[in-house]
Length: 291
Image 1 (cartoon, rainbow, N blue to C red):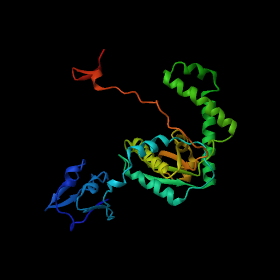
Image 2: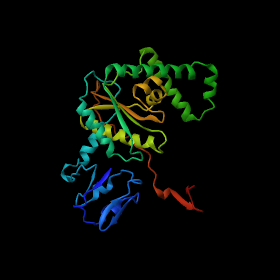
Image 3: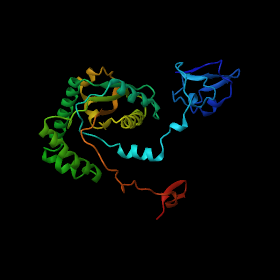
Image 4: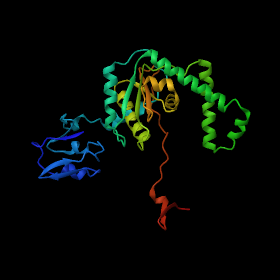
């Protein structure tokens, strides 16, 4: 939690102004924190000019603007970050995994009570692989074998149909391989939290993407296992293995390791569609596209 060094605090009020939870106040010219409504965003620690605030008594460090990456460096990092599905058997040092995970707290979050489970046992990863394989085969038998289901697909919206069309060859390839992973990653990172906390899925994905960028900067590749976590959350064996409570679930998960493939080119020309507000007009308190 946020702690206050009353000897350092000058009562400037910077933390009170930046606090979006309104849990900070000045009492006798010293800052006081209402921890019951604190969201643990730590913006107060980041803004304090006297470093009077800290997390669990661990003193903050000042920023070093000269260490910030240049726009060119950011371009290289972001364009090189790609999903890797083929890994070597080379293990990732636990110190490196620990450091990658530690940056998850730097991401925007609504759930400040996540815990991270790192799996780096080849034996346990084989169990995960088996669960993915069994789940994929159940999906194949359910959706692609029954003929009535093929007719039912035609009633679904086009984007839904496209997703199933893309999914079929993946499931068929898993049947051919006899495994879930194309090649298993040396380590799995699981972000676990309380399913009752709103916006946990979004918060976990923010944390996971931050971790993937840190991994990329360290030369470690990653794969976001979006669909696979659904299989693991349904598996009693995996839940017991990870000691998940009834109210807990895996909200985000990725495999990390040394890549068995090397991407060489920065893709150009693939852009997200952009619209400017000039294309819209306000009418009767509603925003609608111009005809």
